Length: 433
Image (cartoon, rainbow, N blue to C red):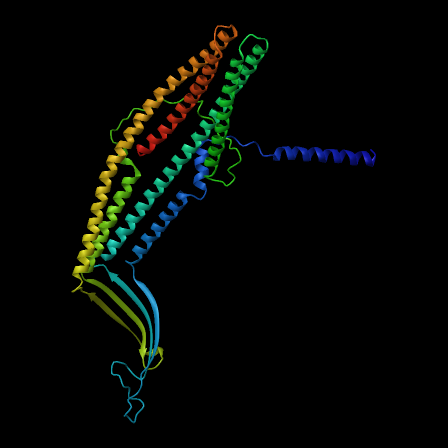
């Protein structure tokens, strides 16, 4: 086989292989974003959830610090002291201060200090740290729940805006078709010029409504995309769930499911924290004990031969600090009582929110069937109005009115479905789920 033909065949084979690899390496088209995908993207981006997660981590380190108080601490200490000799003495070896060991004193200690929690101050500090951690964990759950609810609202807002744009486009196309038909009939003298004006006016109104709907669609896209990106102008590809079959409302099995909301965990943690502060303030009225152990050198010469050890037991008994400690105890008790008041207020508020959400779900679900009937009747009304107008039995005003009625009916239909999905999301929050 000639060399040129072999080279050409090799080149062709290599090019075919490259095309095949390129085709395989192409990124497949990304699927539309579901609500769960949007929530996951929002939680991964910097948000209040990230801050709450960091706050929970901060509270965890607070427990580590509180536990460390129960263990002995060790340190190395060294010092050099010079004491002036007695002025009226002939000997330079006579030091002037009896409390010192000599003119030159060397100290080098390995010290271990252990707090014995006889007053309960350390245990109260640990209880306060645990209460702060529980509050931070509940706050993390609340932040995640609120972020999910906000993303859900924006998600359904975008879907509703896109459906309303399509509704206005369809009705505008119908209105423009009727306008052309009426103008054609007017040119042949079959209808009055007033019919053309009415049809044109209705088309102008619908075109303005379409512009407003397109602006709302763009703003809704910005709102949803801003949860995880700065490129908010690029249209998002999201799954359309407004046309899916909607599940009916669930029957409430518990009369007070709102008591499981995370806010009540925050109240419990806050109260336990203030009660721990009461114990910590009471500890200032009780004796506190500590033990100190030293090993090293305390001598007038720097030599390891003079080493030794010493132990000290320190007992601190407060005598004149009662007013401050009792005032602090009363202050923290009042704060814990404030938490009880806030909890009772929240029970009434959350009970109202739960009942409102439950009623909204039931009523909006019933409205969906009504809007479906409205759409069907409005479509029939428009069709019959066009037939009567074409037959010379109806007026252009009837057709224009039927067009506006159909646009409103379709808008009500999609708005009811979006409101139902939002109401279900509100019910989940109000139920503590």
